[in-house]
Length: 392
Image (cartoon, rainbow, N blue to C red):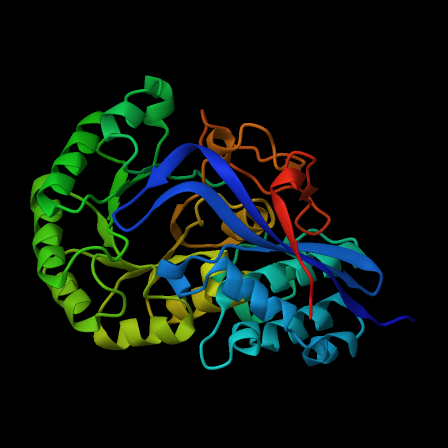
């Protein structure tokens, strides 16, 4: 058997958004992903990472540099085993973010590599991506036996008000919402007014969260959390202040507002710190932020063991592999407070993948493609937005 692993190509994709997306720390006018193609024993896999400096410290350039300089011999253990389940077990044992970044892990670069490896592995054995989860007995306590449709969240960013976005939904469509996430303004008081506005448009059963993206100073975050709880009945606040400020996060929790970590929780070690300090009740998982599907799953397991609940989030403007793999995990997580799916149908009206991004905006559901692998390949519309980067 020809047991080989070859890096076929590394590309960056910059695609203009038809509608901008903005939050307290950043405004997106275009998306940027790193796309990696490799060949595992003759089978091609396609992967994606979404480096964001304000999330993991990575840029597209630094992620590309790490991937171009990768010595593929470090992945030799993957080639030394036969069988799908054994290969998944080997890949789950590798710390790809640290293999690529050393003392400063690079999870977005690792996500591009891992999603490509898993895509190739699944295609080689003619398996859908959900088979990767079945091959992880260590995660059985956080997974359901089969996939199920998930109602996805409605995210209101700062380019539109809650009234503009939520009131535009037909009453029956709005009634089927289960969770709305509001992006915070710089002012806690004005953010509380947005939350009050949103509450007035929704059923009392709809959960509302506010995401500050780490943009509030600690004193503003404590005041804002109190206002959001008392005036607007917000269910939790996400990343209210500078990442890993465990003492400030603990004070917010002690004040009665559940805290969800995002930028503060890149891996299981962050989750352990949060639990040890009482700094959070919830964790937002994102495939790119956490380093891929398997590290995200491992973080979900650790959060469950420590009594923290999880949300499955997304990076803005994911091109394809990331959203497909994320939907696979969302369909199988047993206890998830909310699931995001992005708005690629608005941002990219011409599909960037084959098959295209699909979401039922009336029923608020977004199932994963059936496979094999993550089930996607680049469309012709994506090709003009790609730049090649030769490997070392």
